[in-house]
Every structure is written in structure tokens, then in C-alpha cells.
Image (cartoon, rainbow over all chains, first blue to last red; front, side):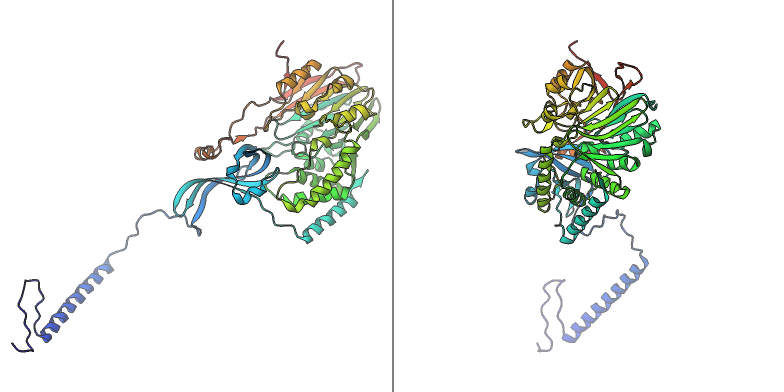
Length: 172
Length: 370
């Protein structure tokens, strides 16, 4: 056996027969040419096939990952406070006809809002379906209104207005 | 209901809304002179009910409403009052005296600015609007206090006057201190300004037309301190001496803290015409035992609508109702229940008694034991 002709015995019909290097390269070239032809055939086929968009409903597009879907909203104010809860009068933000009243547990108030719970305190209450990262859940959210501190300018404006009213009204 | 009273008719109409949207009294003092005590609204249309009542009768509100009194700074007594004042261009406006007016105006302005909420008008925004109207119109503001004449008129055979019997000097000076405290605390919280015990500052009125008198009790209460409340009126008022009112608007929705036997024995005649409005939010008023008490004083007891034993939730889409019920089954509607108790007497008939008619949900309260 010469060094240029390395022939290994064939173990099975699937084995790659290693012949001479030049003949091996010929084999590979042939395989490439065949695969190129196959690829070209697929590409031709693809040009003829229309891509059909699957029929799916347009999803709600929201930028945040969590959101309320069509909640019922109220604005309320606290009328009474007891040891375990509070009463409130509420107005429906979507339908401002008759008012409503309800009792709430102190547990409904988040820790951050607890200091705001006083008689007369204003709060927002929303109830409905929420989408939290794709999971639909029923939810109730209660949060107390926070006001930015009035600026000195605003206060002075109101004080001036009070002065003006005082001067214009004919007090007996 | 819409007929205009003739000049010889003294008419008192108590308008009620079911105990959640206010009350108002519309008075014809004879001679086309009208006065209105407090105001209320229809929560559905937001219409001012006393104004609607007057306009439906064909009253020229711009010229013939002579006085509007705001008895106290409580939401259920001021809804729509600025609309009323805007329409009644000749009316003098009156409410309880505040000594430091600028400070009071500032307090009202601060609270109105803070509470820019869309929950309908708040009491302070209504009062603020009234002050803006008075300022632009440059018409008179009458301070109501004990034994003060707010209106008087003599014309032909009709002599009419409206006098305030409260608040007392002590209550006024306490309110002045309270205003200062409320302003100083203003920046510290997000809540509506709640003035302390507004009922104590209520303006009680005595309306006299010829020999007839009527007392309007607002929400004034009986307190332990005889320098406040009803005891102060009974002990110190000079204008009430010798008066026996034939008609009473019962104070504070018939609650026990608005009752004192001396009111009924000293300044009210026997078997008067008595009327009241219910309160249907939280604690329900009047309680049956108080109705029984009033029935001992008169058989002519009327209420603008029933006290509701229970309320139901508002009707909504089924899925919303289910979700609400899951989270808070206590939510219930404050129902609107319109009623008028109208009483008239003829000034031309000597010894004439009040005749009362009922409209809407108004009814007479009768002794159940009889």
C-alpha cells in the first residue's frame, strides 16, 4: 500500500469511503453543486408561494406591561372612620348621577396611604379587569389623592383675590 | 302644583331630595316677595330645585326673590345655591357672620382651589361662586346672627319680616378661631376642609307675616353650653319673646339632638304644622321614637319622603356588578327621592290655619298606634 493511496476497508454501506484526496474533493464539490441546485429550486418555489397571514385578532397595544381594562372608577371622600374601617361617599366618574356610599376595610388602604386617611380625605377607587404581564386578573385599587404643596405665588394670588372680594362685596 | 300664590297667600314649601342631595325652603311672604332658605339639586339633571320650582310657578326670580339665606356650610344645604343667586339678581345673600371676613374668604378660596375634583360642586366651591357673584354685582351681604333683621317689608295690608335667631356671639368667635386653625393646617393634608361642627353655626330663622309666624330650624342642635344652640335662643333671644309659631321646619332631620321640649312649649303654638326632611346616608333620620315625640306635639306632621330602611346598589352592566360585589358588597346607591310639602294660609282670613298639600314622595306621618 502506498502513502498516496490510503484505502480503508469499508465497514458498512453508509460509511464515507475515503479515497484519494483529489477524488474526495471531487465528491465534496459534487455535493455542494447538488445542494446549490436544491437551494435554487426551493428559492424558486418560495417566489411562487404567497405568504398567508394567520387570522388572529389585533392585540391591544399598550406600552406598559400592566394595565386596567375598562375599569369602573369612582372618586370618593371619607365620611367616617372606625377602628377597622371607614365609610365614604362616592361619585361614579363615568356616570355622575346619583352618589353612592360604601364601607371599606383598613386593609384596603395601602401602607403608603394610611397617613392620608382622615375625615374628608379624597380618594380614587377603581374596580375591574387588569392585564398584568399578560395575565388577566380582577382587581380593586384604592389610592388617596395627593396634592402638590401650594406655592407661595399661588397662595399670594388667593390672598389677593380674597382681599379684592372683601373690598367689592357690600357687607352690612 | 304650578299655580302662583296670590298676594294674600303666605306660602311655605319644603323641598326634599330623599336625604342625600339637600333640602330647601321656598317662601312667599305675600305681595310677590319671595325668600329661599338653602338650596338643593336633582343629582341627575344637576338642576337647582328651588330655582326650578320658582320658574315653574312663573315667578320673576330676577326681581321678586328678595333674600337667599345659606343656613350653614354643609353640602346638603348649598348644592346649587350659586346658580340660584346668579338668577335672583335682586336678592340679598345672607349667611352666618364671620368677624374676619378676609380670612374667611381666603379659607374658602384655598379649599376651592385644592378641590378641583369632578365630583360635582363641593360646598366651598358653591360659596366661593356666591362671593364672586356678590363681588361682581356689588350687592349686599347680610351677616346672620342672633336677633338680626335680614328682611322687612310693609306694603298695603301685608307686613313681613325675616329675622335670624342664631348663631350666637360665642359661636361666631369660636368660628373665627377655627378659620385661623384651618388655614394654618391647610398645607398639611389633602383633604377637604371640614369645619368643626357646622350645625352649631346654623342660622335659625323666624319669618313673620302679619300675625303669623314660622320657625325654620336648619340643623341647629341643642348643646350643653347655654351660650350656643337652641338654649341660647330660648334664653337670650329678644325677638322670639311672645312669639308662638304656627309652622315649624323641624331641625336636623328630626334627630334627638335638634329637639328640646322648651322649643315646643315656649315658641311654638299647640298643634302646629310641622315638616322635616329625612337623612338617608349612614345613620338614618328621623328615628321612630323621635317621630312619636313630635306626634305628641302635633297631628300635622309631614315629611318630604320616607326614611329608607335599606338601599340597593346602582344598576350597572352584569360583569361590573359582579366584580364590584366581589370586592365591596357594601356599595349602595344614595337614592334621589323628590318631595315637596307645601303649606299655605290666607292672610285675608282672620284666624286662618295652614293648609298643606303634598307632592312627589311627600307624606303625612300619622300616629301608628291610633
